[in-house]
Length: 126
Image (cartoon, rainbow, N blue to C red; front, side, top):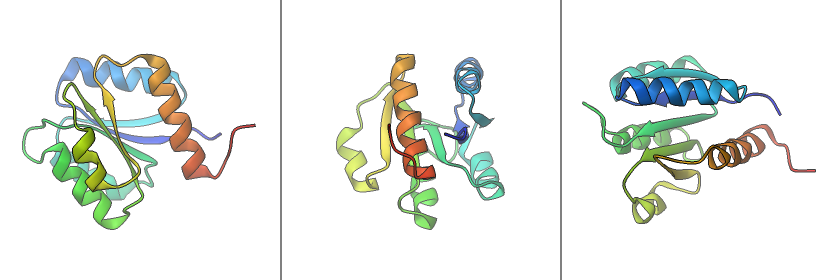
């Protein structure tokens, strides 16, 4: 499966660097930024496979960023990276919005990236 093109939005510098490094070590291409405004400027510059975003961001929140991204493509993958429970709110956003709880396990991240890749690149498990 080709590597995923991921836009990562996290305002905590250390978490952003660690998360980006983890995704890159798994072979994915990552563009990382610290706020929703920068993410909105970057989003149209590439055909990103997924948006991984914190919910609590300065300026545009992760939920508002999700709304804007899904306005153009309701089936786009958006992963909320949060320490809070949002499962009820996710249903309103569509089938490809998920929560990856902060302090996640690497196998959770790998499984999620595999699912995104399979849906975006038309592959299936053998």
